[in-house]
Length: 577
Image (cartoon, rainbow, N blue to C red; front, side):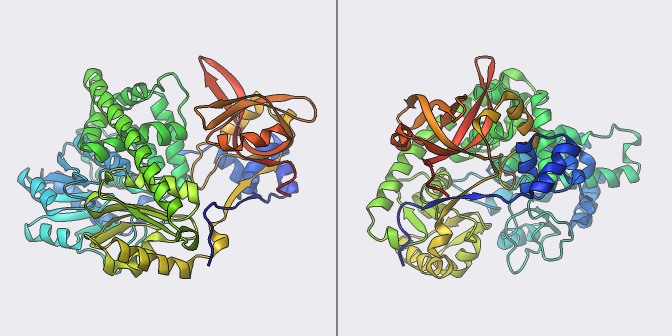
């Protein structure tokens, strides 16, 4: 079966009832373009639209609906009242780092004792380790809370139990057929979980634990002699972890990220402000893009090239000088990470494009012992973006990561070929694996065979959806500001995309040999600036009229704000009917 090398791209119009769009225009007072965006996302009543545009923390569901919440909170209350040391075992990515920081700070505000451990990616690998359990026990821990890991760590949890330690698992990764024998497990993917929370990452679940723990302590009179913590101070951490883990920005996730961004903008956390300055964003408006493209990579860089505890210490830091020192260190790690990533991406792309079998396979599996395992996950993401098919990248020591497309459940696929792996974990869209020596070819063959049975060529087609067709003269600063009301944007809640037909490019420039910048002129003569990232290879199309898919944005540059189009794709006029 031929899957091709270059993915086909199709444009698809999101359906929105014209009558419902008109209703939102008149009753909510929205521009037509914004009304189209909301209706296309299922916000098809006045009440739904108003709730969406004005998210409140009162919209958050009851945390007690999580399976395992009562056992978790009871054990934490017991630890606090007996002055037991609580050990935190967090993952080394942003979700794990923010989860660890949140629980550490909250327990300390309650007067509790905390010790924390984040594993070294290269030495301990993903998940709980006996080494980490031992370290926490040596520091006096009687209870261990794992965050963003633990759901598949049966042996390590059993080991902790033999040492006399209770373990609470707070995780959001795929639940195995048999859950670990922990004191309590909170995971929204548990079959018996009544809380609709499959879209939540670990830091959001940890935040829910804090809400319910505070409620129970309040009922028991715990705060008669001490101040009751304000949990809103942790919303910045929840927003960071949620966006970095590419969780759907729907339901309570969108509420949490909306308010988390507000807290970041208010400058309440010294470590985050230092990181913003290191990224050159101190005078820029904060958005989910700021978190996902600037802050998250710097926090992740600690776990990729150094040790993630450095990122935890930065987020907890309250002194500017120390925070600035830590932020600069992460910024340097991130610079090194980008260099490594670019080199490995080039090598991986060359391997894929020169392999005669590539057009016949719906999944990409590449590996090299020289590749740094700390960046293989990012490389896999780049390959998915480029080739529109699932990709697994294996580096030194058989440590690998995979990323997928909506049509392919990657974790389920690994379960089918698990005999070729030393270990794996993750979920539908992202996985981590450990592969033994000389096992790459057999693993690739087995996974490819399974993927061929599961994926059809048309499922590898890259589909770009747009909300409405707009005339260029409707693109104004007022429209760009109005569309920002639908933020925060991300997976599950994409930015509004609009189609513009029969445009002519003016003042065209090629930036860094890969980006296009200029202005588009429409039939009525109006002109709007545009930027087209990574579309330099389509420069020749702009000698004639083109149809364009683009977002309407506010561009900030040297203190000035202007409206611009961020182009996602372009094609000869009329090619996409």
